[in-house]
Length: 253
Image (cartoon, rainbow, N blue to C red; front, side, top):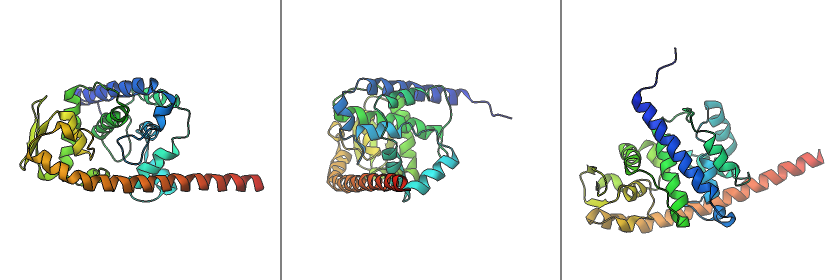
């Protein structure tokens, strides 16, 4: 018997759908050159992020197939899978994201809360470096921030660049939220969410002794990002070479 969804589940999926529509609208209005611009997500272009967001409904067999095809740790699999999905025309991605609206299917191994957090954070990853705005309700940003904070730097948090946030405390200035017990960093909840997920783009919007510690960690994080971007470029080159070899083999066969 199929389990009936609670009102909380319905509210969460409504929020996911609303953010999918915002991201799709954002992608609809990109200029051709903007798709290849770097995103906030280390090693990914805007198009890579959009491609990743079309991979939010994978079953166990699909996850296993990708793991076998890309190989490596979780971060490597996530990065390579997005790159493999980035060869479609740009207008494919907003359409594919809208096609998921209304569905409550999510990736094997995660909960809808991860689906929500993923689409919220990656919306910022696309908009901020392009100087664009994506109007996400602060309460939805807060929901995502609470989920990331619950990882306490372990488990699924390993996909993020670590800035030492579990040792700090945070106070949002635009919503009612305070968490942690270390030196305090305070500012908009969106800026807090970004640092919790290893992004430093809005670090200047945070203040306090905790923010000072984050800034001290940012230099190390920048070096890690540069390393990740280098590895991502090498992965792209390797993937292209593999496709060319396969194409050549088919022609010779």
